[in-house]
Image (cartoon, rainbow, N blue to C red; front, side, top):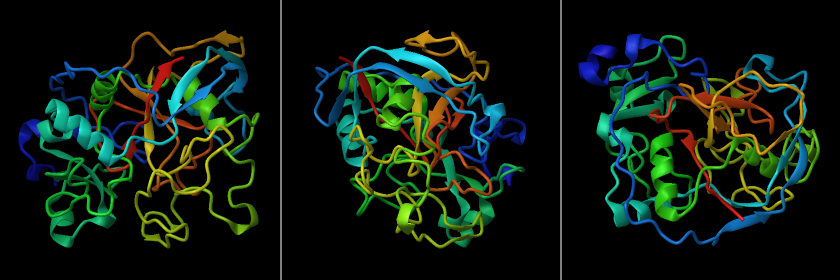
Length: 325
């Protein structure tokens, strides 16, 4: 219940963000985030160079969500850029924290969202839950080093994507690393891997030859996950085969922050280097996560999109970096 959290840490009006099924919103609270003051040189180690050029962004897929602003399909032209082959891992994020002393927003607020099915009964009973999506629990003490709250840790997960990082935390990491977050257009271009207007990074069939190609929910959401793909929660960042550009896990595993403010009004007019609306209240997230399921949140398609407030943190939300060529 909300009373279990200190008043200043409660979700505002207990009202989740519009995309709460995907990644619930903290609710508009704010804290100051100190950006790293000792940036590195911007190494391209672990990054993939992409040539840019024109591609068809968006979709009008019958399985899509038009209200999310997935369409219309429009031609977008991009300059060359670099992007991480993998989402930022716990190992990489630990290096950043050790070097800068960065304190994440989940730590500053004192809590973060965890999927209820990962929690022991005592934590589930005492946790606040968004009314519309009760499978999310606001867990005191949950943050990137303790993904399921007190008593959890990162043993065996050094190469899993870091989670419980806000957009602001991701920007701080990028500043330290000499990189930046990808624009939404860059993210989609990279995720498509050179395939034009395909539903997934590998084609139009979710499990070609009955082979799992991404880490999403199997079974009945949200009560039973059979984990037929091998992973009930996050998977290593190099799990499954990469797409045609050499990027791993751009479908499923964790949602990934993009640089753009969220907006749903697009036109079919060709664009060059779009960066999204000038202002907003939420940032774009892309790729879906291990909690996505066809019956409820079919947003692991390459053109699917969602959003969250820049201070929000959850157990299925991470990021990868980009930089100019």
